[in-house]
Amino acid sequence: MSTATLSVSVPGIALVGCPNCGKTALFNALTGHHQKVANYPGVTVERKEGAFTTPQGKTVRLLDLPGTYSLRGRSPDEAVTRDVVLGRLDGEALPDALICVADATNLRLVLRLILELKAVNRPLILALNMIDIAKRQGCEIDVERLSIELGMPVIPTVAVRKGGVTSLLAEIDRLATAAGTGAAGEVTWREPTSQEIRDAHKEAERILKACAFRPGDQRLTARLDNVLLHPVWGVLILLGVLFLMFQAVFTWAAPVMDGIKAAFDLLGTQIQATMPDGLLRSLLTDGLIAGVGSVVVFLPQIMILFLFIILLEDFGYMARAAFLMDRLMGGAGLHGRAFIPLLSSFACAIPGVMAARVIENRRDRLATILVAPLMTCSARIPVYTLIISAFVPAEDVAGVVSLQGLVMFGLYATGIVSALLVAWIMKRLVWRQVAEPFLMELPAYKWPRLKNVALGLWQRAAVFLRRAGTIILAIMVVIWFLSTFPGAPAGALDPAINYSIAGMLGHWLQPLLAPIGFNWQIVVALIPGMAAREVAVGALGTVYALSATGEEVGSALQPILAAQWTLPTALSLLAWYIFAPQCASTLAVVKRETNSWRWPAFLFVYMLTLAYGAAFVTYHVATWMLG
Image (cartoon, rainbow, N blue to C red; front, side, top):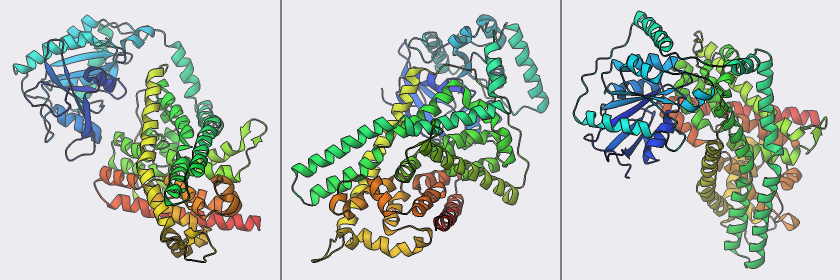
């Protein structure tokens, strides 16, 4: 089915619900991936629209709205949901009907939202999602009584399973018919007063009791929370999980990385053996294989990082980690909700910046956006791994802890501490205000579904490989061209790259970075690294492949760096990458989220200043200590 925007004559239904209620899973189950994603006009909140055909052959336009706890709109996401539901958003038609999606294991919050939605005066269906999990937990819900109390159809669903929405589709058929007759009245919602909010809380509690909702046996959840949320043991467990994650990045990925490296080395050897010497062979071996191959080899480590993040989210631990970090976040002047955007930034700063939309206060949201790029994203892993592997021995500490993994953990910890310190300075010197209290509903513990985990990993691997096959590939071709032409003059004694455009540019800029120990090859690699951090590794591979002589030709990049760089230079580059704003995409997203070039410019300047300062201190202290 076409995913083009449907005519407003087609019944339009909007999915509304609290965060983490399974709303998007239900959207996918109904539309069958016949959907498109864009942004709402004039704002940066994601707009997901799809279409499907009901059993009776009716075409329905379905809109997946951002999660919200009420229609009061205290954050950008919640404001968009409110404006779409009320028909206030330009370019978006008023929905003909609403489907409120509820987590069946936790009805309290959604009942307060439903009481507000009833005032919108649109046809309503309540979809009790995750009903299977609720039953396993011993929850008892009188569906018929709940439908009577709310005055709307209540349909139990299991969105992640085939056939779990059959009853809902039948009810949508009836709703689509009613929507086509124009049965809905005028919107009557207005923002509730404080007293009305308190009354809504009492009414929600009354409905829960009337419908005989019982949480069942929650002793296991309580016992887990007593440990995982403990102010001391909980924090130690969280640090242990993070430490395990960074150890796994090195130890678990090593065999697969060795296999990928061997495959690229074999490919390069075959090309050198079968093709005559010339520009084409140089492009393939020194440009594409040395460049792209040196980036792709780090895919296993990135996948392990994503695996941990997906498992923690699916298990229900992520929200609890946010609560554990609330005191630390508050001490740094950040809102407790900032933990999730900052943790998301371990994967990539872009979703981390976008996730800051869940923070209601604009200054808290902006502070989170400005420190999110300091978190160590997966694009830094290739650079960190390359340098650590070249200069840190592959030894174990006390026979159990990888020394290389320990250094990696230290780099991540430095990024976290730096982000908190910068946030503290901003809040104390720029925005002096008291941090708001952190309120978040803890989700139920759930075993991750293997299919969802595999799909999440595949999607992230596809994104990384797509970057390697497009952006990084294109940049490597440019780097090879700049590093090859115009070529060495007759009788030249130095490697040809010294006479190339890249070589001349690197030597010209090198004095600016000489105080922090960078050579001209690093300078050349940093320039394309502005597009994406991991490109710097590929650039180094290309530059050193073309500047190698004798037995160094075809050698791995790590031993070349170990032989040609000093330890202070390596440490200085690590310090640089902790802070440097080398990602144009992140700056563009910050501009989009803040709707101003002022903040990405500020972000670039302060991070570049920190990077140069940290690298300068690191280089000179290391040089003095090794004196």
